[in-house]
Length: 392
Length: 139
Image 1 (spheres, rainbow over the protein chains, first blue to last red):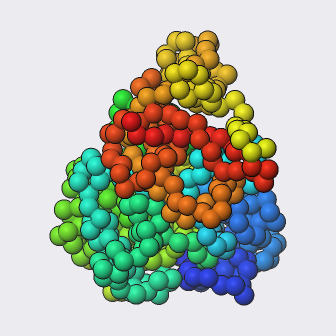
Image 2: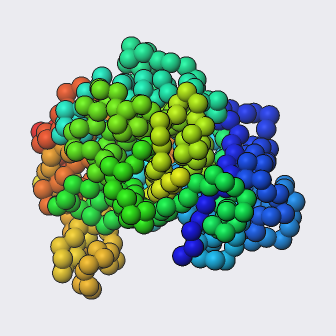
């Protein structure tokens, strides 16, 4: 395997953009990433794109083809990757693999999305062999309710309070308000969060992420190329994809077996463990983490799953401000999904942009001091998990 | 027609003298339970080839619960006007962890509470017939 570097990153701000197409958003992100990388569109040898179910892609998830046609059809190969909300992370891993495996020297990874309003809907496929269809048809359980079930269990097992949940959201906005790409740049108080509508007990509106439009792009390249083109490369120390294990404790369809162990986010933990292993790093070596905070619950549960802290310790670290950029365990200095809203397939690529800016030391008021090693993680429908470790 | 009870999806549940039951399968070799039915064992460490029909329920304990405060999108359905409903993950005594609605008011719930399966209306059709699904209620 060859060493691979992140050469350039770019984003379109997150928000709701009724008058712009997803291709418009991607063009801004790709243009910024190419400029940041100091390469031209002609230099890009392949595209790994996240497949969207909601926008563009000719209705077939061919979002990478949209980007290539829009930028100029140079005849390069395009890989369209589908992994639910993990698609951006999945596309990054495939792009990485193409360069690490020696097939290409310069690859563009891109994810762009325009989301319909409201709860994320199921596919529209009405097949009684589809567990997701059965779960919605026979029970009716939206994403926030799924997160709420996990969160209620944590409150019971570890004593997490509604106050703790609100504190995560307050922390997210305290840092995200400094991010020019974030959709919600406003500080909230505990009272604001606890005063927001209950969506699925115990999770309130400001404790879950809404859906957004957005796009992000990353240019990655071989080490030889990086040394010629930049004096400040960011290295991909690990990149991994995993799926949920059979003994995962949270049924993703209608039912599972009562597990003997306690793992309930196995796809995320497996991907993170693999990426850290590739990097030769321990959880305590990480200077910052960008994790998928669809809900404040994940920001408490994931660091414990991955060994960044002990079970039940996440709330204590939060209370002491240790998850702020200036703390011992900085989580989501970007502001995360809570401040961006979820543009589903773009999120894994957005996280790599943020890690890159943090490791370059150019993140401004949300900068993690002396950031040298960072982790990003996504998970998505189907039990998909991804993780990336970047270092400078 | 009014009073008629129609399963929302056929083949998932039944009712007998002992109460409501979920219709699933169990691997004859490793004992892994499946709901809905499976035609084979999918446990990655099991090489068993025999799978048997199994019924699950009615008793279990509440692993966790929540509430769907806002109307869910299709294909979920509900009677108008919308009333929030509680949701549960339940560990049935026979080793199955299963999701479902709760007919209880969420404010009275607690993790670990004993629950039982029931068949109850999800919603009603225009002709007054009820679409039935499995739900839980505390005992």
